[in-house]
Length: 194
Image (cartoon, rainbow, N blue to C red; front, side, top):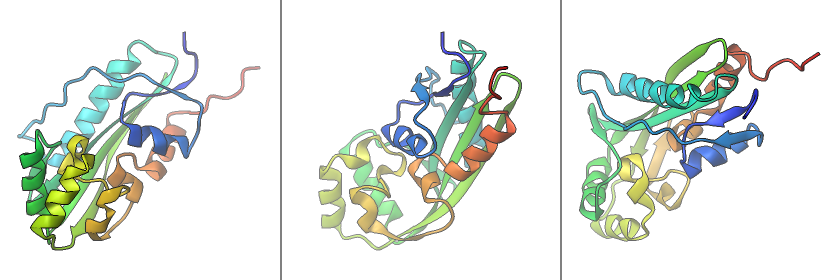
């Protein structure tokens, strides 16, 4: 049994790499929550609700641990751009993002033994105007296929970014400064046992 440990309720390799920047003392236990969007909620609220559902799903099996859940949504004019379903969908998303500013909202939740806290962090990203060739070539790399909005700011997709505001780690999928604050407020790390 894992005791007083940190658990990441996500199998995202990007979130795993980001969390390693804070600590290497954690385990990965992916959540089985289905990522369903509630179109009655604002995108920022959807991200927070999904992050909380993921963290609570894993936490019920690890009551003595701190469980981190996260969910990232890309929105353009309030339309949520999820992970592309195929190559044509990825190209469609990138054409929509080309030359526009969009928002990236990451909901984060920490379920601790005594307290649960969550919040949403939002960043703005502006794409340069892309040529059709750039879009096709980028999609052919395969990078966009498992990413909300069909791009990775930290990967090959960085060439498409004109500028962005606020937290880059938020755009990648785990806002580290805000996560550290939530962990602190939920009592992690636990005091050393006497």
